[in-house]
Length: 414
Ligand code: FAD
Image (cartoon, rainbow, N blue to C red; front, side):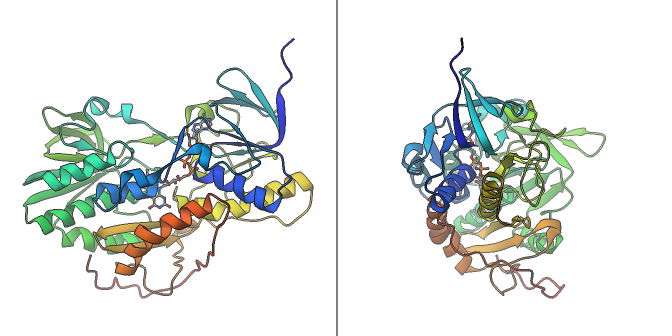
């Protein structure tokens, strides 16, 4: 007879920003709660600083900590990968065939990077001037290439949405353009996106148009990267609805890969037709199984996939999981908050904060379209500390609020 599966009151899938913070927050609220966290990775990464690493402003080793050091006390760490879900039996299936039962389940498995969807890319990443800030091992190479460029053409690509940190592709662009100016080298920078604007929220997109103009960047909308020839130093794009192919030579190429829901979620009964885990966008409860909740990058919620969103989602999941387990307490609701600190140069940031439907919700009563030095200090020194505290269940204050500003874009000095 097969062994009886182990069972926990709460099982959390994924020990990233979302999973660790939910586990730690719940342990703070209810130390007696029986929690298992399933996470196969040996290390946890502070991904938001990889942009700064690629801009020569942060040490890569400071973005990584051993997973074991971050698992909250009293939480059982299952160092294994989840392969599927059996919501009827209330069990999670592990890759080694074991099953773990739950009373309530939280899914926080992030998203997958689809490097293979761009022909030739995997073979050349990290060589031939092709890099990406989306990988721990590659972000330092971004800076090596940018710092070493003595002239020519630099390309920066963005894939179709949704991706994690939608602003990250252009953060790399501005930090590079700024460096080329500082170094006095003549490099033509190009930005390629399948989208029709620099940013999904028009309020910020209009201000970013001014940053693009400031650096004489050539912005190409409706362009999707489909192939890279590293040794030949060319990138090929499909353009517009008829997908005509155009090829552009480069001396440096920064690629942000296409992204999708993790395969084991896509194939599971928790996903909708899009492949992402289907949750109510306010309560973060599964729309299919009421004892399951999801947060972070892996769900269908139409917010910008960021650690800032995770920070706002965790209290909602904590309250609603406890409500589900204990049968009491008020329902909590997520407003779609996300934040994107857009590095417009080395030393200044445009702090884009917004909620569902593009409602502008800055934390500070200052026009958020103006790039500021204080926000650079916030991003480089303060947010990393807040992040590591957040993983311990110390969420800090959250005072974002809808505020109105003049329609005219203010003067922008990146
Ligand atoms: P992750 O933190 O990615 O964690 C997912 C976890 O799930 C991982 O530990 C993984 O190992 C685990 N997992 C995967 N598969 C399985 C499985 N089968 N079984 C069990 N566990 C599994 N956010 C901001 O707020 N501000 C920024 O400035 C910012 N900049 C960014 C820049 C870059 C270059 C990148 C890459 C990201 C950036 N982000 C930023 C986004 C932010 O890092 C993510 O949105 C955040 O980490 C999402 O948290 P998560 O827990 O959903 O996913």
